[in-house]
Image 1 (cartoon, rainbow, N blue to C red):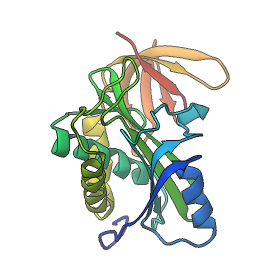
Image 2 (cartoon, rainbow, N blue to C red; image 1 turned 30 degrees about the vertical axis):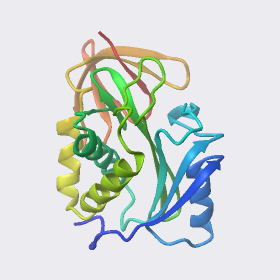
Image 3 (spheres, rainbow, N blue to C red; image 1 turned 60 degrees about the vertical axis):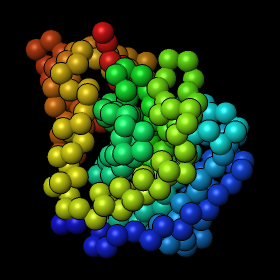
Amino acid sequence: MRIVSVLMDWDVRRFETIDSTNTWVMGQARAGAREGLVAVADHQTAGRGRLGRTWEAPPAGANLLCTVLLRPAEVSHLVVACVALAGRDAAFSVAGVSAGLKWPNDLLVGDAKLAGVLAEREGSAVAVGIGMNVAWAPAGAARLGASVSRDDVLAAFLSSLSGWYARPAADVQAAPRAACTTLGREVRVDYVDGTSLTGVAVDVTVDGHLVVASGDDQVTIDAADVIHLR
């Protein structure tokens, strides 16, 4: 089973300022936009991360802020994994930066965040946004480098995404687990209800859920904030 059967034909739209590339793309999806639409912004006034966080970036177009519209034959966590893996590939091919995947969809260089991925679904449409620090990063985060071209990163990202999106699902499923730097780490899991647990991340299931060994139990995490502990 493949996610799609052909490589993507990307339709890139550029904005100097926008509230959120995810919001714009999802609006276009509701109006019937085809798969392959891409929104790229120099600045977002309401950029979002996972769990309602904001994504911080300067208004000068220094970083990659983009969202792609996908309409996969089967919606699953593998769609988001394709985007994360493509971001990882682009960071290495353009800037020589090796990043790992922090569960579920962040890119880290060591323990410093390089990029985050956020997906929103409505019907058959999935808007997947990626924010990557290219020439600028907030304190404590990673970046690709001051001389790295955002457009070069975008081109490499879309090229890699076309490849991942056309691969057999089994190939896509194995890759994020192999690149996941959360596995083997002591972690704290913070749930949205305010509770938490600590343990060691031991596995990622076929559904993309994280398995944490905590005391005598193994707990499967489908949605939570996972903190790598030192």
